[in-house]
Image 1 (tube, rainbow, N blue to C red):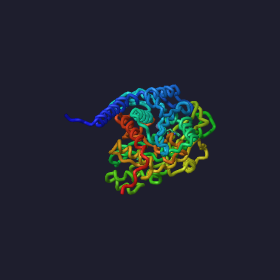
Image 2: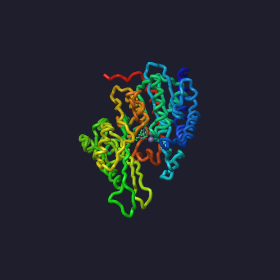
Image 3: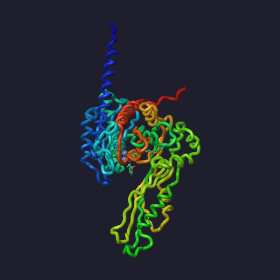
Image 4: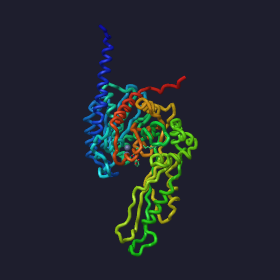
Length: 476
Ligand SMILES: CCCCCCCC/C=C\CCCCCCCC(=O)N[C@@H](Cc1c[nH]c2ccccc12)C(=O)O
Ligand SMILES: [Zn+2]
Ligand SMILES: [Zn+2]
């Protein structure tokens, strides 16, 4: 009879138990857990209105479904700004600089009447996808990170490198209570972070013409913002005797000038140049040829679609337009708000100057509402721990994906963390395919069940990969 040493049998049993636990946690619980999270409508309606009942319910949910995290003597849990969460997981080697994972609990509003295939807070499954607000922005990361940690704790894992998890409750309204106060707290404790990973860019597949195979873009910066209010005042009067131009007409012309005269194409002047250098070998003919002429490439290939166009310039979005009180009264006043997302190679001041010169009409008052410069560019070279660990983890879970740096076109809570770390990355491993841009803050936001499982595995792997003391040295 074959005899196996005890240690081998023990190891096999441990492996079997491990595999069973992985299967149970990742494959069975995964979709259920994301589903219950999506069903809680943690909506940020406006800067002054949030669904606080839902935020409280979400807190209760986390405590219920992640019992190990919330009962562990290792993990310290704190509520910040009433509804945000800060988790501290101390490592066994305190000389290793900690890192931090970020995600947010709140979502933008959603109305089924806008044409959803399934109600936005139902988490209904259709053709292998979970539908609902927050499935890609950003409850998949909240639940993915926590599920990975829960599983590691279940395995008796103690990290070597300390890490923090920050879950904001007001990211969609720019994080004034959540991220801002988490950063204050960490600063007061003298914390410095090796790297920060937040939501942001994704794994793109089939959205850039000519690019063969999927590419994971790690956001090494994010665009700046400028919001301006344009207003026109004219004397009111009877609509039967109108002047040649109304306040609405004058304002509409100004807004049209801004839309027709887009901000310059700056492709090649910011880190998006590196994006395409890293991806160059993945372009087929004739795109590879066109790529040698960056300007031609950007105008032929990138400017045509809203998502790729956002990569190459400061974008102009007219988001609000108000005027008029009655059908037969000439309006005394018209106002519009325009939101610009500033390309990495421009400043807020340059954009404000360009806005005024483009409108070039004394009758239009231009007021600055809010804004900030583009965020600093984090390193992405061979020696940069955070970037390389994220890249390795992407390759571990998605071997077929090419990794490259990119610029996040939206803003994230991570912009508040610049004083804690020079290396801030914006990336979540969700698949982004043609048509998906309309799902961000739009209708039919969804994630495939398989992708959610990949996300849990990604964070599970990232936490372990981050435990390495130093990056492996250059190969000789
Ligand atoms: C090869 C080029 C391809 C380019 C493809 C682009 C792909 C885009 C993929 C994903 C979309 C990115 C979305 C990023 C997350 C954005 C988070 C968000 O929605 N933020 C809001 C709210 C917000 C956060 N901070 C601030 C500060 C001030 C105003 C608003 C906000 C937002 O940006 O509006
Ligand atoms: Zn988000
Ligand atoms: Zn969002």
